[in-house]
Length: 86
Image 1 (cartoon, helix red, strand yellow):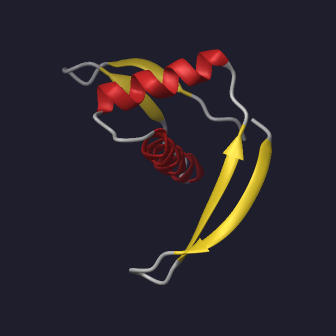
Image 2 (cartoon, helix red, strand yellow; image 1 turned 120 degrees about the vertical axis):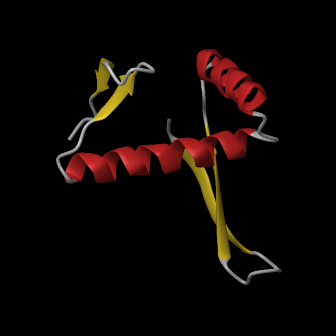
């Protein structure tokens, strides 16, 4: 996803800088963002993006500690291990 534009704005309520950027996405990712927005009850694609980054950051921090990210069933049997590059 190439970054086309990056700019910084000030949030009036907090005074913290808020950065925005524009990305180019293909039709498949466009549909995935909309499907996730609806199924997660998010109000925007930006909310989905922020959640995705939060989850990826958690996974990367776990990987750095030597931990694994897995999908498990209700009996805690590992069904799939999710590998991150790096």
